[in-house]
Image (cartoon, rainbow, N blue to C red; front, side):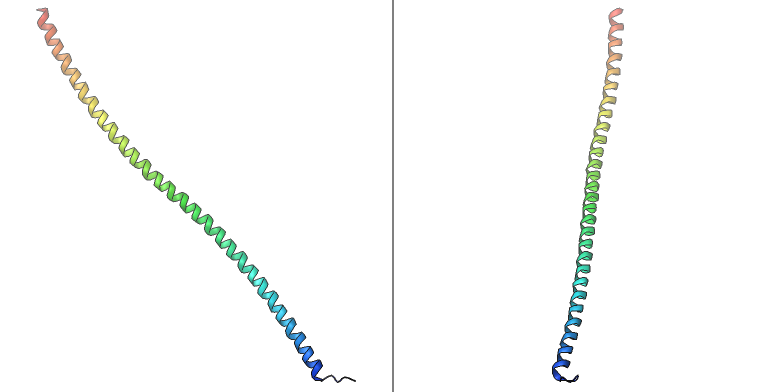
Length: 108
């Protein structure tokens, strides 16, 4: 006959209880680790998306700066072309006046 308070039964009951508690903790740790891994994956995914977007923004800013420098250069070329055009218009008018004087002199 076994006694309910026998050392074998109580130690066996305790080991079963501690095993079930530790296995419960194991499953909780595993679930927590899974949640952490999912959160970490989500964080990394968002970080990659954020960095990609920032890279695109930086590229747009750099392109805008290059475009602005091209616009400044083209604007300078237009101003120079306008100055040359005005100079040529003045020269043409001067030549017209001289030819008129020469033509008037020859007709007399």
